[in-house]
Image (cartoon, rainbow, N blue to C red; front, side, top):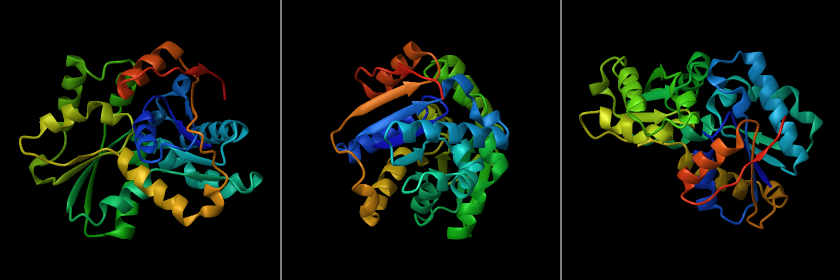
Length: 266
């Protein structure tokens, strides 16, 4: 099975696109809503939380894990891969930052506004990754620390959320010079329409879901030894460390059909 780990319901914006592109693969989703927001956590905390989530998903039968959380991908993924993953031979943990940058680096954009959590901005992961692949791209980083928690609280479609989005975007220097926006937190696609409405001119606003799904499909083609370990029964399992009813509601609203979470601890 393919495991998906996030700080809450944000990673649902990744897994929904994976289900569309790769519907036959069995998946397990784990949202750590009890300890979110990850964007305000220290590096050592993020390493601990990510590794606990990864071990839980491995025990659930996952041989491949997608870290569907930018904060954990930016701050903790490399350390987990280099210092802990060797205790699980044959297993892999992938993040969302590298595939996102690879997909956007060659589309001709010159100034990309990267909207993220505080932890992701502080890590400068996107600045470094874009510089490696296409140094001509200027990255404007801006943290929106309230957006993720508000989405988790069910406020994504509200006047309060719209006001908060407009407040944050009004703090960005020279928005008229930006030619693309990246929603670099998997919670932020929930407020994509509010982000698009802020700009007076039409500007591409990218979710990560389809970018990561495309990259995952390519990864499986290039790694048949991993692909063969994955179940293809279309099974779907959803778990949360937080409130089950809230996760059910937000997921069902997002997907357009009933989703049932189970409660767990990591």
